[in-house]
Amino acid sequence: PHPNHCQPKRDMSRREEIEMTSARSLLGRKQSADSDSDGEEDEFDEADEDDEVLIQEQKSVTLWEDILKSLYQARFTAPLLAILGVVFAYQLTIAPYRTDTPGVSTTNDMNELRHIRPMPSDETLKHIQGIMLRQDNQIEMPAPYGGSFNMRFVPVVDKHGTHELPDMFYEGVMFGISHGNSHNVEYSRDQPDLSYSSLWNELTTMKPTPTHVLRRTATCNETDWTERGVGVYFSYADLQKQGMLSSDKLQPWKRVYEDLLWTARKYKQIYIMVWYPHQFGAPETSPKAGRMHKYTNIIQMVIPTRTGMDGLKSTAAVWLMARNETAVKIPPKMIRLDESTMEVDSYVSVDSL
Image 1 (cartoon, rainbow, N blue to C red):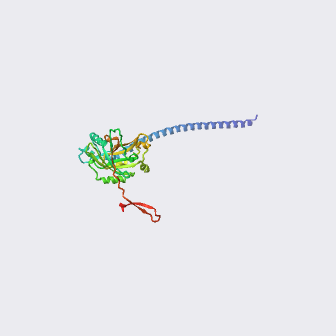
Image 2 (image 1 turned 120 degrees about the vertical axis):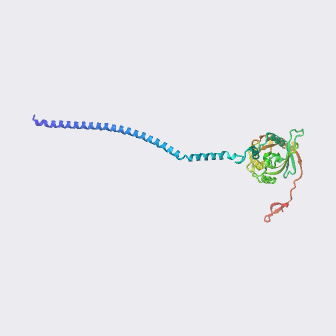
Image 3 (image 1 turned 45 degrees about the vertical axis):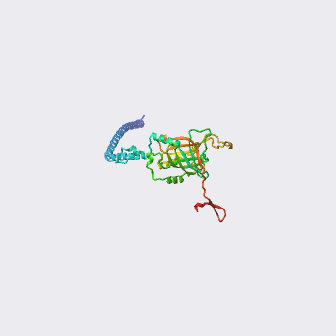
């Protein structure tokens, strides 16, 4: 063959060798570049970790410096706040219960406390309890009953039994309260400037409104003890109308006696009396029985006005002992007519004209 016919083949092979060489060099450079980038990334990761550690160390140092700086700046404020806290705690927990005056001798604290709240001895409480259990109460009755009656506890009953109290006692509750110091208790000696008439007016205008406010006198036949007071009567029907009747079947008057206790404390009394009916059997309905309340007793209860005087408490049944049938004087009345309708407009007492 002619030498010129082999020349194109040599050129093609040379060109392929050049391309292969170029591809190998490019591949080598790429691999070296990749290895270099991996190394740089590792270096960058290590640098980032070092930076984070340094930043955390700087933050912790800065935080402690800020805390120390704040404590140093508050070196005068902190003791002041502590003192104010102690003063506030004292005023909240101790000062309201102090019974002495600052700067005054406190050698007679117990004696002073006796004028603030009742602190009778056990012997005194027992003595008063005996008197209250044996007391004889005389109540002036309202219309239409009239007159007055006496009731008391009797430990022994003969074959003739007992006498029933007026019907009103079986239809409501009566509270007994006084304004004096009949037992000569040290707590009640410093009486406020409140008279019997002020007690009477306060009870007649109290809420809930009583059905009757009656005059009451208590005596003890075994001693010379006597007490002048007031009887406050609430019929259960009136309590129900005023929304003050309790759901307690035995003592439905519980919702009203707190008001009487508050009044008794105001007049520095150590107890109040309560008389209420207690039914222990079915009521008699036969006219031949003669006693409609045969299975109902009137309970007399003494309730202390303060804590720590449980020695005053007593509960007993009382009965009618005497009755004065003095008729009630009812003034005459005039009938006022409405001129337009000629119907009764009102009734006017003659005494009020």
